[in-house]
Image (cartoon, rainbow, N blue to C red):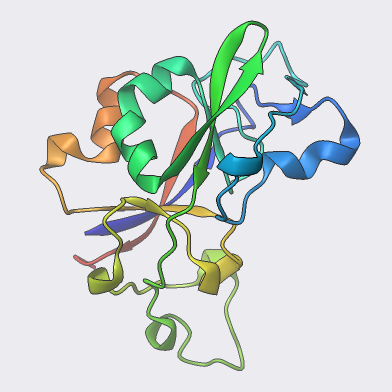
Amino acid sequence: MNVFLVRTDSDRYQYFQTARDDEYRRLMSDGDPLGASWSPPEVYAPYPRRQQGDFFSASSDVLIASPRAVGALRPFFEQAGEILPLPYKGVEYSFINVTVKADALDMDKTYPDKADRPLFHETRFVFRPDHFPASTLFKMPMLDGGASIYLWEGGRPADQEFRAVYERAGLQGLVFQELWSDGQ
């Protein structure tokens, strides 16, 4: 089994920002459901000359997916939370709000010296596979307040895992940073 931090490659690809500065938080999520109150904000692409990928988020707490990405990854997105409409220039993109939360990190093994926590990029993460949710995409409130999106793999046939489906569909715009492997 492996765990990845999932983020968009907003350094190389276009991403969306809200047209109004005071609405920027509407393109963020801590994992709470938004569907009942969702009203899509007006968005724009601040760097329209960059390559257009399939994911348009500027942060690691949500995924904004193209219709092509939703078509390929819909079962993963539906299991993980909400697929909310986000129109832009006549195309309906989707705000993927991951609402599945799990306390899958083994805090005692990840941070054995609680008084001197290493920096995120220096941390050797340890996960508890028996705490992974049914959804392969999830958030961990215990780690970062539930902001970032994580992906676990190893519970399905290899060709049906999220990254395999993503690659087979030729999608672009995501970065998968491996945090843990049970084979380490």
